[in-house]
Every structure is written in C-alpha cells, then in structure tokens.
Image (cartoon, rainbow, N blue to C red; front, side, top):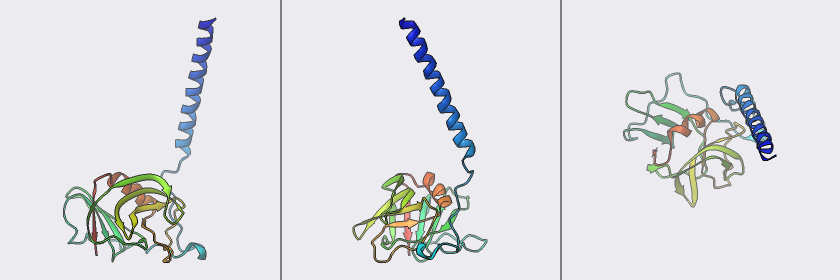
Length: 185
C-alpha cells in the first residue's frame, strides 16, 4: 500500500510541475515584448504635467564634469540621466522628472535597490535605485508602474526621480549596488 501511495504522490507531483511549467510558458508567451509606454500629452489634468519631451535626434552629450569610467550621470539642470558604460560605447540618455528634494552635486554609490515598492508619494513604483539622502529624504531613481511621469506635488518632500518604464528597464541591470552615480549641476 505504501508503494501505491508514493506512486500516486509522484504522479500528482509530476502533474503539478507540468501545470506550473505550462502556465509559466503561457505567461511568458503572452507578455508584451516591451513595457507599456508612458502616456503622452493626453494625460488627464489630474495626472499633472507630462515628462520633458525627448531631445533632438542626436543624444545630448555627457556633461564634461561628470568624471570617468562606468557611471550613471544625473544632471539637475538638464533633468536628464546618462548610463555611461565601457569606453567606446555610446551612452544611453533619457529625460527624467526630478523629485522635490534634490541631492547635492557630487559622487555617490548605489546604496539599495527594490524591484517594486510604494513610492514616497504613495504611488507603486519599480526599478528603484537609491543613492543619496537629502533633507531627511532618501533620493533615488524609479519608474511608476502605471507608466506616468507627472510632476511631483511641490508641497510634499519626495525623493523619487522618475523615469519611463523602458528607461527603468535599462537602469535596473546597469545601476547595481555600489555602482557610481555622479550628480552634476
């Protein structure tokens, strides 16, 4: 009787593993190849202003005073980020929506990361890369799960520098723990 019970358990285990494998395959087959793009100017008035328009066809040059080597460069004035990789590779650059609290210029290291959390503004975010503290607020990059990039409420102290979901997908594997972040004016 014991061998019959173990045979049934083994059969059920195989069936369960096959079902899980099929469901995993089905989920990956129906998932979009690229994340949803953030809404454009058609955003509702309550959603706030949209992100800065993309730059010209030629990407903005990496700021000269941003150091050397592999790094993330964040320009406060240009409201833009560059992912600067190995020498010879053109860096990826994209606009961001700054938080209401800004880090001082200088060099930082990525101190922590979270795949998905609720932002300091109460909005679900993903690809959170934290690197600084300013005015008692943790500052870092993140992408809203809903794809929006509205201006933050100026009455709230927030540290989330928002990027599009696609840019968050690029930032996530690039800016790992102890990666260099350079903040320039």
